[in-house]
Amino acid sequence: MAKTMPINLTSLKVRDAGPGDLAALTALSQKTFTDKFGQLYNPEDLAAFLEESHGMDAYRGYLTGPENLVRVAEYGDGKLGAYLLCSPLSLPAEGALPGAVEMKRLYVDTPLQGEGLGSRFVDEALAWARKRNAPEMYLSVFSENFGAQRLYARYGWEKVGEFIFPVGRHEDLEFLLRLKL
Image (cartoon, rainbow, N blue to C red; front, top):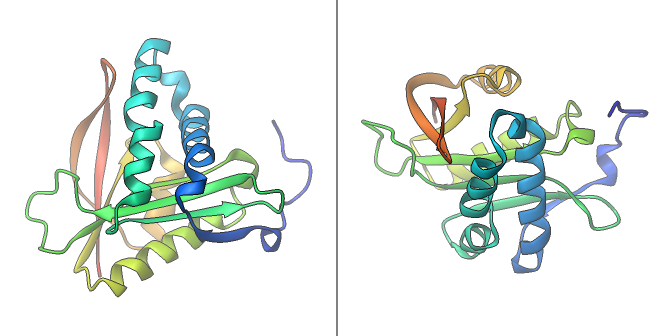
């Protein structure tokens, strides 16, 4: 669907997510993942992955985890349009320094893409990491998600590894990126 007019980012409220956002955040996470990558997987693999990794239980844990940062961009009508999730490091990052963190997820719904919201969320993720005195921040990005790779390269993220990311029985090649803080 083509954009018909630019989105006014000042009409969006960016805020911390809370328990009351669980259903909307889960729905947005499943929608944005499916919109971006759903065509790569058979329906059974996609459904199983969404339930396990983007389901209510997963987001309940993220929202209640005191070590996590969960931010959302909300339209004036309360609908969510983007989200950011940061956490302690759980990626397979050999040689990571103690206290390293990860930007686990950053998804922007299609109508908001290209409007600077992704950059704003990266800035917020880095500010969160620096406030924690993290020595470095990691993220993983799908090897064929070139737009996201360009965004991260502008910030100085460097590829430090690769790993296989399973989505059901399907295996994706992920790039492991690191930014020294």
